Amino acid sequence: MTAPLLRVALLGALILPMAAIAQNGTDSRLSELQRRVFVLSAQLDQLKAQNQQLQADLDKMQTNLGQRIERLENGRPVSKPSTR
Image (tube, rainbow, N blue to C red; front, top):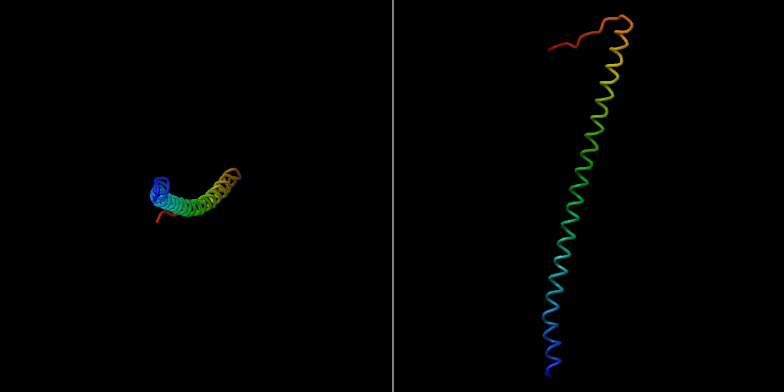
């Protein structure tokens, strides 16, 4: 082989494995990002469900408080919650 062809062959032998490593690194980074998106999406769904439950609990408490205040304002006794 002539010197220029030898250089090209040597560069090709070095560049191809490096390109494969870079591709593998890109694939692994992409896989990691996809995994993180999946985990964060699951956490988001969980937090949305918790938020809905908290909102429902708050609505019940507000309704209950409004009824108690109305009874107090109208002079009716407020029933005490049972302590079991």
